[in-house]
Length: 488
Image (cartoon, rainbow, N blue to C red):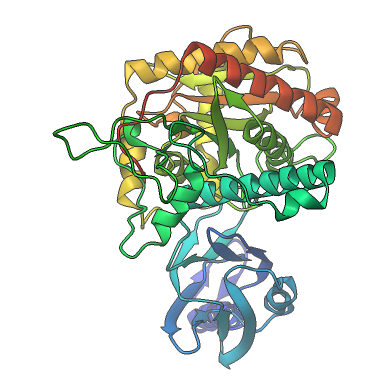
């Protein structure tokens, strides 16, 4: 007998009560986990599938080659309506997924079959609860043959060049009449305008054995060297086997990095505006302006680390810019604070010796937490990404970053308020490219109701993009990019 305050309870009754508790607990587990949300994030880089639940889920997967598909057995869950919603979320234009099927494979085991448009390299991992998310089971589906970003830049420029040439030809035809259309164009004389360099590059790319791997060091990237037109021999210097040096076209590559994306919305304004949405809109406007601009005769080309709504880990953003040998890296964000009062734009450069202010340190810590919210797979990291995250930037890189930051602040001040009149510094992970001048632009405080409204205003977005491109041009006019020593 067990004695208590005014009552006694037989030991056998205690054992029965304990057994009942265990049985009830087992029955609860048998019902399986609760699926709180499912999400699908399609992009050319990769497609992400996320299953959010109240408890962690276990998964076993296997790939089938013909036709390509990925089968995943998810343990500890029943076929709930939430899982069926995945099928409804699939878009026909998903670059990687052709179809989705889900079914109860066994008690407490659901099989998810993902029909693929091509072979993939899957990464399947769990994420612990963070921010507004509970437990997440993540499937990242990377194409086996990933597109080369440098080739994409060249192809985009070639397409624009062809469109411009066609417009010019159409205009000439309208001016001169039918006779001009039947008259062959004269051959370009030696010493006259060079043959189209991009056409030459694409022709070389299509030859057997052509190597279009991104160049090595930063001072070895994209230079496009023109060659003489077909049928005209190149003049060589006596006693040498090489042609004399000719004028080259130097592409100035600016990497634009719209912050956050996908699983990571970034800061959210009082009216529900998501940072990831407005910074992508601004980056697209800035991209269009950069692509239409030349500096000292050199055309500029913008490369975006993401041009859709998907998550990109911080280190991957850096390595993407390095792959295209960017001359400049600009990460675009919209600031937020616990109070709605702070306002104005800011520009940040890297510091490896501490932050320039407590606010800059707080901002860096907040932005560096993006990988936790967005969900980076910490168990599988590309060697290039690891180096990018660990490399310490040079003093010259930081000095150049401060220069471009000052130019940008001077132009942004003409269209809006500045939060700080000088470039701030802190240890931002996304600015750690040791060979690329890099800045982070906080366009405004999205937590301020007035500035949230302005960030959503296309007129202000255009003004801001205009200001940023003016600052970029002024920087390159005063600091021409390094000459390249290797061809693509």
